[in-house]
Amino acid sequence: MRSKVKRALLTRRLAIIISLLATQLLWEAKAAGTTNINQPLFSITPAQPVLQLSVTKGSYVAGEAKSEGEFALCLANSGPVSSASHCVRQLVPEQSGRAGFYFVASSDSPFIVSQSNHPVDITLLNVVAPEHQTQAMPGFVSPMVARAYQTLQAGHLAEAVWRSLSQNGSPIIEPTSKPGESLLTFIHKGAQFNALIFGAPDRDHGWMTRLGNSDIWFKTYTVPDSTVLSYQIAPDVPQFAGSPFEQRVALKATAQRDPLNPRLTKPASTDPHFQFSMVALPNAPTFESCVDACPLLGDIHQFSLTSAGLNNSRLISVYTSPTNQHPAPPIQVILFDGMQFSSEVNVLASLERAVLNNRIPALEVVLVDSLDNSTRAMELPDNPQFTQMLTHELLPAVASVTSRSFAAYNRVLAGASYGGLGAFTHALRASDYFGNAVVMSGSFWWADRPDYPQDKYFISERVMASPMQSVRYAISAGLFESSPTGQKGILSGSRHLRDMLTLKGYEVYYREYAGGHDYTIWERALIDGLMSLFPVESNKG
Image (tube, rainbow, N blue to C red; front, top):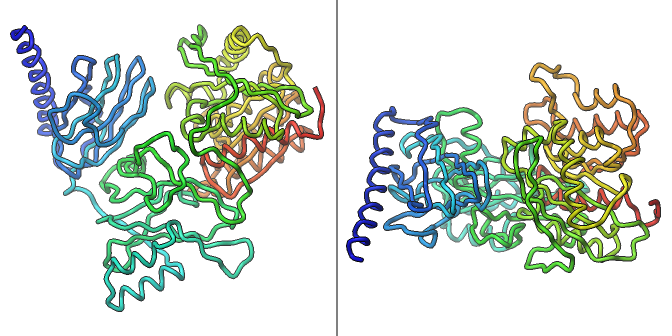
């Protein structure tokens, strides 16, 4: 027995030593500064679920994980590490396929820990040591922050200024002289070099400004007083010489919920890096979201769907609501990115609440997993094989599980972003199956080829050139979703498509929200879209 234990310990130690040597050789082979690695490919196995990285404290690390099965990754600071119980933060929540991860090392030589019964391949994409990170900060001051600055300049301690500034939490909401507007100021304390708002109410993420020489940071926006958004604050985002995309995603290494804001969109997660704070200004439309444990009265069935045409498998969840007094017959909603809608917000609980309040018909919701980002980008926008999967594989499989059938008029495709684009195009292609689409923040800047003219919208042009189909559309977009480059974007594309559909004679409902590219908005837009398509006063079947 002792010899077996010794052999196991020696094997484990040897695996760690090999991992350390391989990582060390990698770093020594690269020049100092930003390291675009794209290799080596480490494999974390169930037998050896720990990978130690030879990086220094404060280093920015970006990587990609891939597995054939379900997996999750977390980060531990010191050894010996044997399980996820030693972890200090989550890197990848449970999923399959590919996932990116980003973090700033809070210790020398941290550990990546796998939670999986399958091997997980790890590719390190970028590592930037602290001495090669740079700084950048613009700024804007609200009246309340201006008073705090004056107090600081008068010689008061930063701690006293912060207590006064943060006494009512964050963000700070102030009136303006213009009706319908408010000042929204995000504040943070403790960052050494910079701070950034992930989910800021503008066309890009918002860099915060340092207050004097203190460690207090702020950023103020003028927004509609009906604004709703979710956000994180990323302190000390690593800055380095890299591509715009590499620099942009670096914020994920430190982004976390606002500790001054108790309202969260993801209460199921206990890791602040995977929690988002939420703010709704005083004149935001009333919405009763479910933020705590919300047991469902309806039924849920899950099964794995293997597609012969797409050559992949995905998890399908089917929720059936209680009955209600809505005059319309029950409807079926196929929701793309269903797993994300369930984890980012409590979408099923919100839909059930709308059913019980007779705001929408009783329904069956089919949550469709998108697997990973590369598969999502290939399938959702305008893929005929994906349409074929929906009509000839998904719908029969769901019917065999639930023993229910729906006419096209009572069936809805729904999604956001690429999912919104997909809901539109797949319904347009298969209107005999899908008579409705709820299109949220659709990626209508998209075209099927890179050289498509910049002054035209591919989907709008297709609508005008195609015969009219029996589809009704509820389309929405956020006021903060205009393109950061001034070119085609989600907001302008949605408006253009609305106009083309109206000109063509389609039944289309359109709404804009004082929000951004945000599940907090989409949760509301989904229910509003269903209410528009199936109003209480209607009894069409």
